[in-house]
Length: 206
Image (cartoon, rainbow, N blue to C red):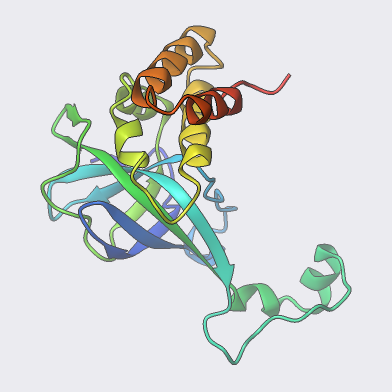
């Protein structure tokens, strides 16, 4: 397990076989470098040394809020630059949590496109998946079946966002988009309107 290519994005707080919640790390723990903000539909990797596997997931929600009911934010009428200058403590009080759906794992050199035998451990680190890892995870479209069963967010939006991320990892490959359209047509063949809606959303911006 090689974590030399990047610094951790977040740390696991709760986990199950199907998903996880993680808290993004403060910059002071990230060697002073700006953190990569988790993106809806993006692919992440959890390095789980106790289980001797790397676990892959797709981010389906990102929430920023205060740690308790006492430190509630209020409107101050300042720009972000003004807040950083005059009220820097405000940002230290906010916590960002990401939720992600597990879609596969890697054991040794083999990548499996199904749920892992063990969930990530609490306090395992979460990293942004590399382009190569995204390629391996999305070489076929089995991951879409797992995403299609998430109920807490609009599933169609999540599926479309994950395909856009997979396409971006392939530098905008039109061939991949065509394959994705075919996979969506097959997966939602009994729901034409839904299929058309998702296909429209995976088109790259002009």
